[in-house]
Length: 156
Picture 1: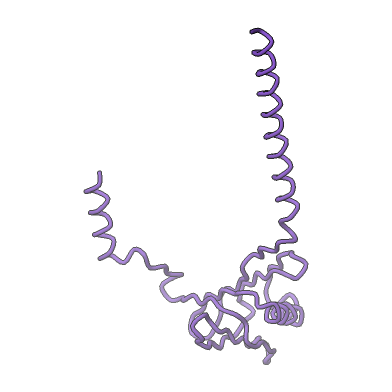
Picture 2 (picture 1 turned 90 degrees about the vertical axis):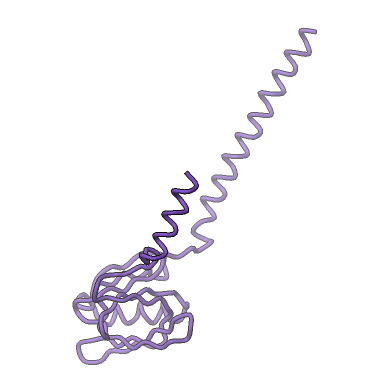
């Protein structure tokens, strides 16, 4: 079994399986918005990745956009819906330093999405609920064990 796993790892290192590709002609960049502005029928978008590389893209009417708003809802659409609203969402993402992922070919973005937020305020309800549930289970278990101990000690 160990020899099989080692053999597969050895073969996969030569095949380049660990590389992620979007499509043959598309590339992916993860970064933060540096600037966004409206130019003619397009939105010009500057992204900066974690290594400081600067990318300048165009958001076209064909671009699929999925951005999380500040209220925590996800807006999905394109600049055909409302170009000014898309620009407002991009500026909000810029000011909140929300990471964006762009799939692009050349300087045209085919898909632009923001990561889902891990806002602690949204998760506190789930945390409190799970804590209360576990506390009830724990104290219920202690209560049952205590009753069994009383029964055993009364029989002696």
